Image 1 (cartoon, one colour):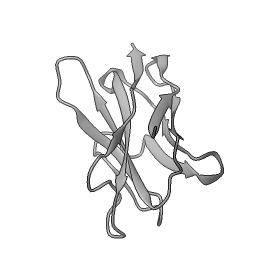
Image 2 (tube, one colour; image 1 turned 90 degrees about the vertical axis):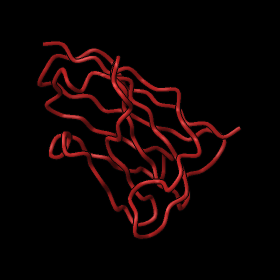
Image 3 (cartoon, one colour; image 1 turned 60 degrees about the vertical axis):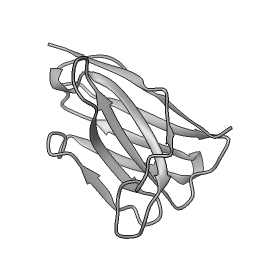
Length: 124
């Protein structure tokens, strides 16, 4: 069964850093795109970042530009979301998704597979 497994969440003080991982289980990332979403309590889910695994095209939400970096390690079949200078507004459950894409896009055209999520909590 194809699954995505997120890890790396936790409790961090404001200004700190975390690195989230999204690993593929039961399949290999190929010419897909990976998206990171987050959902805070009482708020709608929002897109955070995407990466096209074929051409490394990336996209970031305005609120995380300059603080978050998405990357792909093909040897580990894992996508990372490095997060710096975290603040309370980043507190949420973070999910990664996988789906087919096209060369002009950074994000999946359709989010076919979702991970179970990993909690990020930023304390002040």
